[in-house]
Length: 240
Length: 256
Ligand code: HEM
Image (tube, rainbow over all chains, first blue to last red; front, side):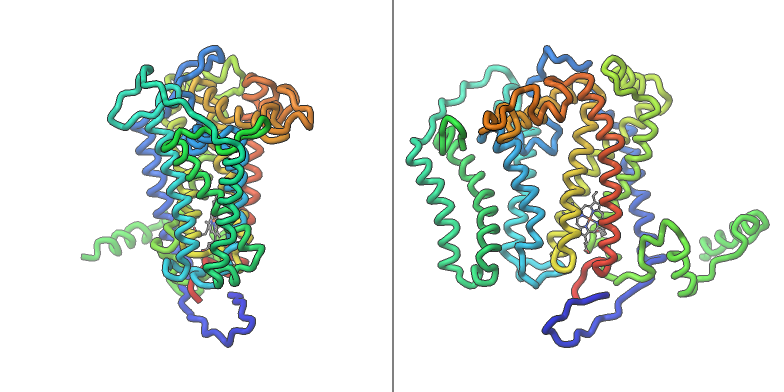
């Protein structure tokens, strides 16, 4: 095994190798059997859904994307489609791709640890859980016209009219938005100097930019739910 | 109680068995190595692996299971292709036939469907495990990138398959999904700044995805070709890279 050891001394590599056959192959074989049996068992008892023939004239209500995209469809409640459906997923994919290049903490490479990488693990686990919470809401708690229903409520078509929404005044919106990113980018750099120094300016800005976008998405949702704010920034060209 | 050894002896110590397998298997280190090296399928593995890498509590076996489900989907998918024609006048009827007429058709369709859902789950759990063990850290950065692309491809595989039954469920799900493309900044006709590039419903990115302005025959054919040919081929190629890199990067990650 090749080990990068610039500047490190000699590393004593443990010889803890075992033969792939039978140790690993046996486990893989068992896993394959369990998965096959599980899938076939489930398929025997539960039918895949099939509705009526498609009819462009009669929209399903609610019309739902496949479950793994319902998190994004849920975000659509709070943001315009260009953000929820295109820009946010692109940022998520880009952010995931960037992770190995942003996280330059050498510790925790190849073993489970929370202590040695608190920030990375917290951020990722938060995002991961958030994604599935949104999927749960979109799948189970959204009924006709995408209205919200608790699990114990029946889906009906007569639910109370949601309260009217309003936009923030444009100057206030711009100040809030710029202030949020400005404060989010500068304050940690000032108060957590070693965090900033370790990452360097480029990694730091990208990391915080992505993190703030994730947090900002949550904050926007809170604004909507708590204060009925439709858009933070509303312009004729673009709404956020 | 030597039931199992006795049984093995009974099974292997007769003319029929020996006519098939020619010689026995002596459990020697050399033979353990040969089992891997001289088997075209198994030699994807190295002969020896670090012990922690074989532990289910380390890998959760999720990458391997994802790959296995991919193979499972390939086989059930090929069988489904014998019965299904991506023609708007036939597609739905073909699925109904599968459910009610074709022997084991319902079972076949169910297992392909549930396998697809399972794969979406296992791939994201695999990603979660790789993150928690910090396995994307040097030298494995690029394999993480390949992984993210595989993740997206897994979603797209499942998504393109959703339209094929041509029922209300798939039709409206794909409607919701592809309507997003309308809103793409610059490239979708309802997206911000799309007027700059002169986007209309009949020349924007959604049009390119659907092969039309509405979900109709061309969209069904495109979904079919992406689902059955293009994406599986791309994903297979990337999986080869993925597995090759796992080995080139020093095998399963672990503490030094
Ligand atoms: C179709 C999808 C995928 C398949 C079939 C696949 C398969 C595998 C397999 C079989 C392994 C060996 C170790 C294990 O089983 O855990 C592995 C390792 C790895 N995978 Fe994946 N994977 C897929 C998607 C992903 C994704 C989405 C990511 C991350 C975003 C990823 C990143 C990695 C990395 C970094 C390793 C090396 C882990 C280590 O050395 O501990 N893969 N993959």
